[in-house]
Image 1: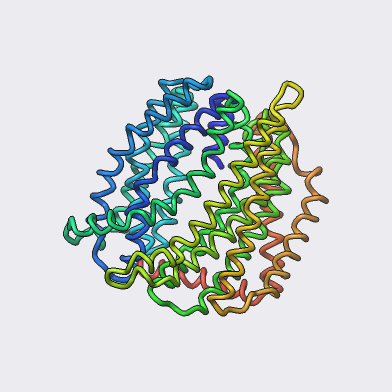
Image 2: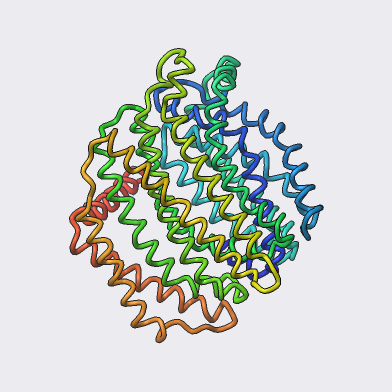
Length: 478
């Protein structure tokens, strides 16, 4: 959020839209990386030594992706007001994105918490880097690219530090050969994501503008705070792959809802001040933030359930599984469902844009409909995946805990309603407004933590576990 504040306060909406487009293209061409990272997590979780082969292969695939990036960037620049030279500079992010994602897969398989350490350092270092390149040197979108590149390099260094035990093995072409042999599975798994991420390209082509992307990206930057709660499930996936107990699932859902529910509430009530902090130009996008917050919440649950279904899948643990076995597995079945869902989303979005795009409707209204399409599209697949999970895994759903968390969140919202006019002062200068925002935010979070600590035994256990872990860390350092 601090990084986004720096760049949205410094860049114009069109420039911010260009940056969002660059990130969209970079992630769009991370397809080949999934060929390796899809399998390396599963194999490392089972104790197989594939780390070095995985790491080296990421360099090969990134080189192959770079020409594809340039081709798409050229067509986007030709069909809109995007700066072609800036789009070329974005090419620098392709190889570091590949290497970082590959290392993430390696660490996910043997030390899931390492992925969060690396992410924390990455996001923190982006702030001073952005201050230098964007604020002080005033390099615009180019400065944002340089800042992100520098943060990626530090993130890679941290990831390598934690992945060292898994990188000491030998490099084997057999590993790459096997990954390529089964590449159709992870490539097929990326299809729904690539279809869904095509929404920014569809919007650019149909409207010829990146202003709407700026609105959408600013709103999404705040809304996706809800999605950070998915981090609590990182340890569940490798545990299930290694045939861990299904009892972990219920405990994991308790933790997931403990963070996801209040984060949803916080994003909703802080949608207006959050946008004001990013840039007063985005202040009227409050409804877009709220819609995308619900999208982020439902998508978080969706991904958690899908990770359970993939975690208990055993077909790839067998030697030389047949094509028929693989096709019938969750690896393919979930991809089929997600593809149908993504096609419906893009189709509905395209119809909306073609039907409504005219001089009589504002770009803000177009983006609002775009956000609504995103929310509605995730509900059917969430319902389907929930039914499939309940069929395959027996676990009791923590309804009582969820009721407590919802109640504490409602209390937090009421406190905000009663106090925000006294605390928040919408001053044009961020230095005048931001301190009041921090105070209001701290009060709301404090209310939630206090209520859940008093009413929920699981929360007290969580707090004590954190304190004990910190004490143990301090003793070991001494």
